[in-house]
Length: 319
Image 1 (spheres, rainbow, N blue to C red):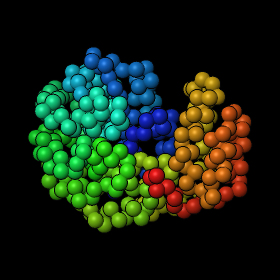
Image 2 (image 1 turned 180 degrees about the horizontal axis):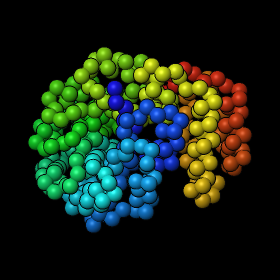
Image 3 (image 1 turned 180 degrees about the vertical axis):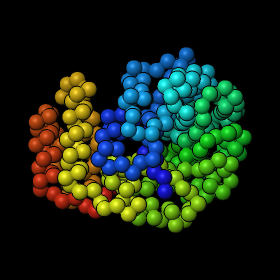
């Protein structure tokens, strides 16, 4: 099985990617948090820094673009080709209300005429391969067959399907019936994404879809960094490795971010998920969340690692 790491805005930037890869591995491909180009293809300095080849030398990265502007997509793809990239991913899955209101991400799925014109343009002009990450519709799963028929008209290199609709956000169960329809009827390779949080979840999925060779993990990997390797028979993550990963990540954020507050914000975001790997870790998580200085934060983290055991599997449930 090939494992992809889903783009997680604010978390899975290049510092996290490289540090994760050093300590855990198991990831075939990473996808960047989405780039949101201007009409002329211009990107923010932080977006450029995140996808620079020299900042991603240890990982296979596919940049992801969020736009409904075909010219902006093409110009960004041309720039990415100059950086050495051979593939770009189109985001048709983001369910955020602000994104959807602009008819981007999953909001673009409801604008089928506009989407078709957009796809016509980018596939006729883009200088590199295009994969698509999509939901199965904006409001109802019944939208998906028509969307898949549209996607099948183009040389999509891969279709990553998160089988929820936009209005689900991350609630309700992924619709495996509709994913099965996609796996059976897509003209391109299909990757599954959605609520695979444990090795048991992954085994259940592979048993039901033995022909699907790729899955994209996100929140499950944040809650248990060893999930992909563990699903392939490796031992669970040990406390020493996880502690070293944490400390290295903390040091690297301090090197590139200004001020304790920014570093603490980055690290606290990770603990929303990571605490689920500890037995009775919530009291410690509260101390971590309340920490206002790096010294108080490190003390809370040290106490957690010293006083609580790691579980073999995260208890994260997606809530």
